[in-house]
Image 1: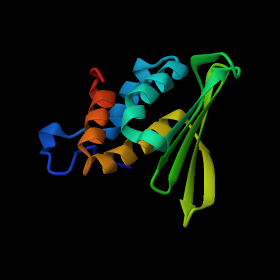
Image 2 (image 1 turned 135 degrees about the vertical axis):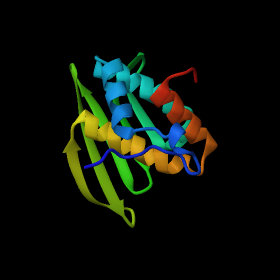
Image 3 (image 1 turned 180 degrees about the vertical axis):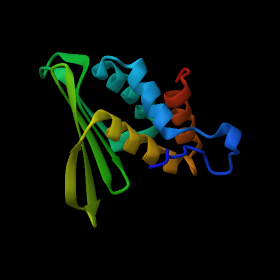
Image 4 (image 1 turned 90 degrees about the vertical axis):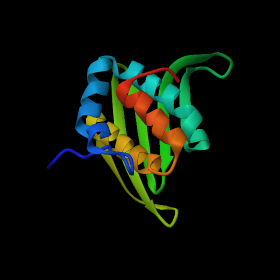
Length: 142
């Protein structure tokens, strides 16, 4: 399968993002998947608003900065990542008419690919999402 392009609408080929390269870059930068997830949440929280739900570790009175799970709803897809010890368990669910019709367990690479591809689609009509995606892919401050 050829790599998916992360080229924003109207951009020329010199400015195109390679989705497989972006996923590899994220994976290589985040040897600790929990840290990578925390960075993604920090980059996307302001952009996605109530479409991202983050559950943190800790009790009722003592919240931690460590992420227990994150759920991102983009269109009919729900991407969920749950931290279990040193690993992250990822799933992608798809709904139609508000009813979940399927959910599948995927690896972190596939989860990131789906997330970035969906964000890329949204970035074609949202400047804020495009900027967040650029920060995730090429780095930068939020």
